[in-house]
Image (cartoon, rainbow, N blue to C red; front, side, top):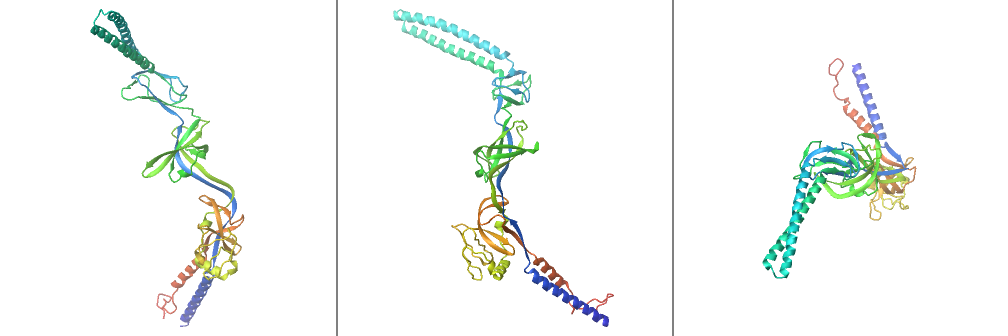
Length: 436
């Protein structure tokens, strides 16, 4: 019996201690807040646009042939440097020379016919003047003379065409550059009956390349000619190449309802490391502001906990900073302060206001144990930081987040209390029996 009484007294003591600790923890945790702050400091705001593109030569020419025949000789190969007007290949000229000879024969025949008809025309004209021949006979001679002249022009055109085709059998380079591709081999037959067959692909100087990048429609408005561009290629992952925006093409490219625009980027290639077809990852610098006051973007989005803010302003009325007017929940008016040093939040009973019809930007500043709001004006903003123009000075601490330290403890002790066995419920006695 005495043993059971001792056990019950020990259980009651433990329960009282747990209840006391829970009350103390709840009292402490209810007002235990921690703040994460950032210091206002000078820095840079950089905004960039990233995209992928393909490296291309500035000028690429596909060289073909207008005549059919067998490739008799090829004088260049892949990667061969060529000059403008240099002979690249020759097509067998035998059938073309035969056509020239045929055209020459037709031309000579036409010339002889013209000479004969000219003499006849002049003779009949003299006779007609003396009225020794009929007008009908003269008209027939005149017709034959005119027809001979027309046939001479046709024969001359055929001869000129045969000469041109003969010259087309020699393939020359139209530009100076490098042979990127050679499609034909020596002895191969090319047919130019329906389309011009491609023989070579030549690019201009490889020391000046370009990047053709596709920029999303949401970013195209930020681009301007001359903006600096950095890009990398997979072949040289540690090397950054420099360039600038040369052209922004207005022709849209729609792929799966996604609209992009082609942007041409200058890509100097003095070491000829860049090759046509390489994939380039470009970064376009669209904005850069140096040596300005900056704060993390989180500070602009921070809003204190409403419960904490109400209690804090109620218990610390002297910590209120002068505002731009408005009232708290308690009805206390805020004092006026200069423009640029005020702010407002919808939390804790503050009335939201505007300045010049625009929603103000608010930051919360921590000075020791005091916290107050500040109305600020911002400039350039990137993905992480924002430029501060007015309202803050270098060295100020702005709050970017807050956490309630007592919530975890409160929930833990509550769970412990709910799992504790009531002293008025039957307990299992040692040895597996039920206590009384």
